[in-house]
Structures are given as C-alpha cells and as structure tokens.
Length: 282
Ligand code: GUN
Image (tube, rainbow, N blue to C red; front, side, top):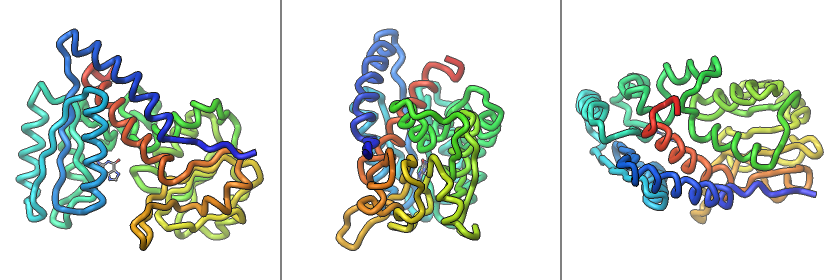
C-alpha cells in the first residue's frame, strides 16, 4: 500500500495553526514582517515570490516585495539589504535566487543579517545547523523533515540517499537526516552506479532537476520517496524528478508534484519568519 505525502494538505493545517499564533503576537503588538527582494524578471522566481506573499497574507504575516530591474548593481542591492537589516519593523529578509550574473550570490547572502536570514543561507546559520544549534533551517529541507515527522516515519538507523548536492536542498537535508540518526549517502551528477546506491535507500530524496529521471528501477520496495523536482512540461504543467505513476507502486510513502514538497517550502518560510519576529531562541 502506498501512502501519499500530501504537502498541500499538511501546509494548510500548519498555516491555520500559525495564523492563531500570529494573531496572538499581533495582540501583543508584534506583527511579523517579511521583506522579499526580487531582482529581474525570471518567470519561475516571480511565481514563487507571488506564492510566498500570498501565504504571508493568509497567515496574517505582513510582507512587502521590493522588485528591482535586471541591471541592478551589486552595490544597489547591498544598500537595500542594509536598509532592511537596520529596520526594526522587518524581521525576515529573503532575496530570491538565482540573481543576475553581475551579482556574486554568496556576497549578497553574507550581507543579510543572520538574525533575519529566514532562508537559513547565511554561513553563520549554515554552521549552526551543521553543529545542531538552534537556527533557521533552510525551508525546503525543513519542509521535508516536517512531512516525514507528520507521518511518524522513523529515521533512526535508516539509510537515506540524497540525489543532488545543492546548498539549498541536497546538502542541508543530508545534515538534518544525519542529526535524526539516519545513515546518509550523498549522490550527484558525477556519481557512478547511481541505481545501485538508490536501490539501497530506505528514504530516497530526489533533488536533481531532471523531469522523470527516477523510476521504479531506482527504488527499493517500500522505500519512502521524496521528490523535490519542479519541472515545467511543454503543456505548462509541473512535474517532478520522479516518474510518479511508475514509482508509486513500489514506494511505501511518496510525494506528488505538484502538492508535495513545494507548498511545504513556503510554509516553513512562514514558520521561520515568525521565529525571526519572536527572536531566534524562542
Ligand atoms: N530559489 C529557489 N528556492 C529558493 C529558496 O528557498 N529561497 C530563495 N531565496 N531563493 C530560492
């Protein structure tokens, strides 16, 4: 029997709970506020940013979007980040990635105050995550962990195989699963004999960015399969890195695309924004 890990449904539940918490904070005079910065007009980024603003509105978190032209200089963006860092009414700052070529992404991430870094991308927060200190966990890995925990899927001693080693998803989800006492294997585009490794996975996290690259042949019977891919098909519809119809018979739990990991990513951003408003250690 395969169970669907419905991220959309779980994220609606979590947002309802967060709305109650935000209402309570507002009564005490604290309105969590997120500033989103979007540079250029990448259509996918625009769509993600719209989703983030909408989710803020639903939970009562206030947000503003700073839209900058494609030819914005690094200095201009750094100066805007500085303003937001120094504005006490702003609790979270998110600079949507990717940035145009003239910008050094890492330099921009370094400029965001670690206390407002709701993406969890600043090296201080990455370091804290690595050592297991309380910090902002990057939203997609945080969402994946929350989905697994929502179904009481045990991680202890399990073999988790990650496909993909990005700073945003692959690397941090491996660290988080390690912290939960899983045995973690990282694989990526240069990995030899990928299928041999993925077939040993009790938990398979697929974040490679290639539509339907993974089918049942890569999956051990009754594995938990988490699909982080968001690929746009010719007809405009979204699809994952996993061939869902083919893979679902073999998995014990599987995420669909859409309505899987995607909605959870946005929901965890809200959670991190509330955490930033309350102060990191609350
Ligand atoms: N681009 C794709 N995913 C993300 C994310 O989680 N945060 C930011 N800032 N940019 C992204």
